Image (cartoon, rainbow, N blue to C red):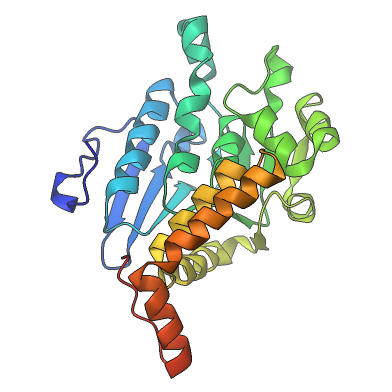
Length: 270
């Protein structure tokens, strides 16, 4: 059952290759892929734990923004645990996309903090996030075709929707790598900074988002995600309904009054 009581939000106690940190003072939670000796490989179990973490963050009122990062200097993650695919049943593999879509389902803004190798499920996780801040050493790729496979956790579908069918085919069917400059040019990342400035760039975006009314951010994410692939009239109707709802909120009144009075707004999420 969903709850807004932080004491009742249940976070997983055991995490496979993940590290979780929560900072109520900043309003943030950070999920780190933490197997640097194996380039932060993402196991089958880790996918389930990621899903549980993002679900809990979504229900935790003390979490305003979630950051997804990779430990070490070489990679966000070079991909999944390849041997594990042979151990999983075909039916299990058909559902892998559900866990990897957890950042997209989370109602809060999610930032992917990318550096180094970001391959396979790494790119798929990044595509499911709302913002992608990248270091200049970033290398993106969906190399699955090289082992007789295709992306199976949303990679082919989100990639095509973001960069177009032609570019998606070029990456997926050739298993080609894309550097940070190209990723910025085609809109796969929102910002590229030197590796030494990645922490600061992410912190700036976190500060920007946590200063905004959380309710409006959650509604914006919901409308954008739900209407993206639908007909324009459906999207306009959904946008209008959300717009009308936000008109009734205390945050909107506070935002208008603060604007008129030329002061900093104090948003309460109501």
